[in-house]
Image (cartoon, rainbow over all chains, first blue to last red; front, side, top):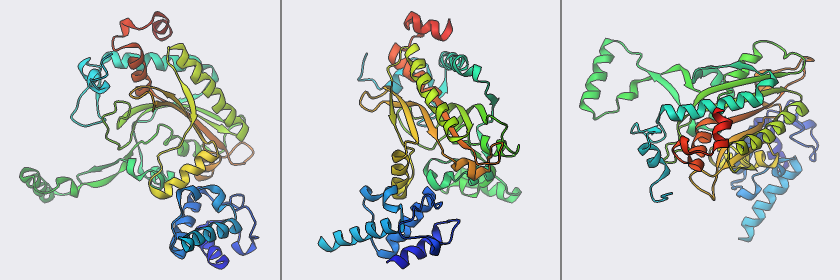
Length: 83
Length: 303
């Protein structure tokens, strides 16, 4: 999952730094992730993992770091398993 | 007050707004315009001493600048582009035939021009200022007013498709522009009080398009980027935004290359007055006959 997220970030994140240089916990907004890029990232994650973000998770916190994204996606996947 | 007759119909009956057959596209009477002119003088009185540089643009803007602005990313549903006939004589004959028969859409052959309708008064400002080079020490302060277009047909007279927006735009450091925004929130409340309008200020968001827009809405609200001054017009439970106070962080600075004197990226903020909405709030609150408005309100506007 981590690799998929990093791949997406490289493709749509538009970051001025190399994604490989970023720690999992690094603040993506501080690294230069724009609002619009975070939307593209969200849409990319939905496609890659075949999920749909509920409105309650569509916020800055969900996409604040690679670790946060992993957590958010896992949470959605688990919720689906449980359903 | 007869609440059975919708406010829009009462405005038509009183001759203040003039029906055109299209929802949200209205003529204005001399009286209506006089209220707007009076309120703009009040804005001048409150903000004039700040020394903003005034600029007036027509309600159309350079399509290239509109594209750079990213408006289509966020609000494709509201945008209006200007298309014209660009064909030859034969195309013209076909066009006339098509219009006469009326079966096909004659507008299909129209081609996009270099002009789009201005969505907010400040849109043509940023590239204009960027062209000048670095901002002077102390940043920039600008005074704008323009008719603006948003494609959202509605029977609510406070939601028009072509309406006027008066704006002040501030460019500078983060603290400079957020202080400017706070100053106008305080001034806005005082101004509305001085003309007898009951207002509240609340956190707000722009009408971003689609599900992806949900995320932009949440981001905007989480970061307190937009506030609105609300006045009840057509609904007491859902009052209408008559002013908005927006902090763009450094997003416009980065997008347009707006830099401060020392070369760092400028932060920007703008405060907008919805002039028709304010006039409508006055008519709704004080009645459709301005001669009957409270003496102190009349004195503030025309004294």
